[in-house]
Image 1 (cartoon, rainbow, N blue to C red):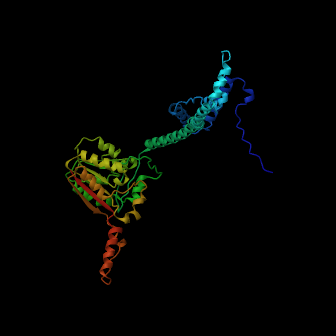
Image 2 (image 1 turned 180 degrees about the vertical axis):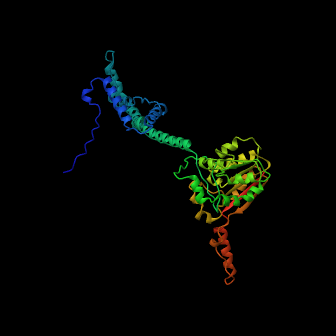
Image 3 (image 1 turned 120 degrees about the horizontal axis):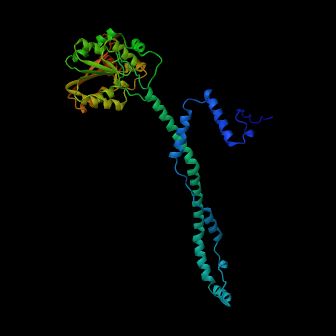
Amino acid sequence: MIPGPPKRPRYDPVVMDEAHDVDDLVARLRERVEERRRQGAYPPGLEEDLADHFRRVLLERAERWDTPDLRGPLAALQQALPLSQARIPVDSSLPGGEVVHRAIGKALSRQTQGALQQVQGFAGPAQQLLERIVAVLEKLAQDVEVEIPRHLDAILERQALQERQLAAAGAGAGTDSGLAGGPPARAMNGAHRAVAPLTPWYSSARFEEEFRGGREALMERYADLAERLRHSGPVLDIGCGRGEFLELMAANGVEAWGVDLDAELVKVATDRGLNVSQADGLRTLEGLDDASLGALVLIQVVEHLSAQDVVDLVALAAAKVRPGGQVCVETVNPQSLYVFARAFWIDPTHHHPVHPAYLTFLFREAGFSAVDIDWRSPPPADEVLEESSGDVPEVVDANVRRLNQLLFAPQDYLLVARR
């Protein structure tokens, strides 16, 4: 025996048989809704979402299309066809007029029949065409009234969902950490404007400690860069992280300050007495006076940015760094395949690497007079392919060198652009 459909559950609503009064029914329904709200039966924001939906339906749906009556005229046309000589009236109000009309009709019957056949030859196809036009218009009216609004409602719902997701992402935008492609390197993405930001449950300071390296190692790594900027104050360090580079600047007596999105790392830096703010790097640059910076530093930041952000960054740098100033950008070298097999994808906030040729092109096009590349962070020597000791043909060693250049090129590059 095939079982019937399952019975629908009973929801214990207002008993309809007893609700003879409409106002009483509405009041009881409202009471029931309020009770379920207190019990947490409705997800947060449900009422707002429903209100948004109905507002869109009312405001954005096209006005109702009042379809004209097409079937009535079509039926009249169908009744008038086919044309026939017998349907030509011969009635007359004159004495003997009907006999005269019949006589004339009989005398001209051949010509009349020929004319009717020609008209019928036109009327038949015209009738078929009109019937098809009416059918198409009725289908179009059905689509306009039912199908198109249904699809529009679905599109509007998806749009509303995306807008809510983007709004939530924008409200929660805040933390993006950067990771150097090579040996210990600090990097916080202070310029990144995330659409869907990562909000990890782990500590960003712990992440940096695990994958970035110790404070002393980083200060040793960037001592040469700090020396380059000894006479370049004021210096803005975008994505300054825990502030190791700012410490080097302070030790050299250079005025410097930094911004970063990560509140935890900003606190670490400020606790050391460094001038660091929690802020977006691009927005910070936009707010500066033109030609007010002696140098701009971004260490392991641009790999976190979108393509448009990189373009905007270079344009802003050209406006905010004074003539004679410098922009220093260290980032992952995409020409080293070793990078992609090691550190690059450890950091989930990395967007994509920026090729040195493209970044050089941007700075030159923005008006920087000199752009130099410094290759940094070679892979560990014990991981590089070894050349022979002379007991194999030279071509083998040449191929080994070419492989090393492709696989084990320096993991980072430092671009220095001068105004």
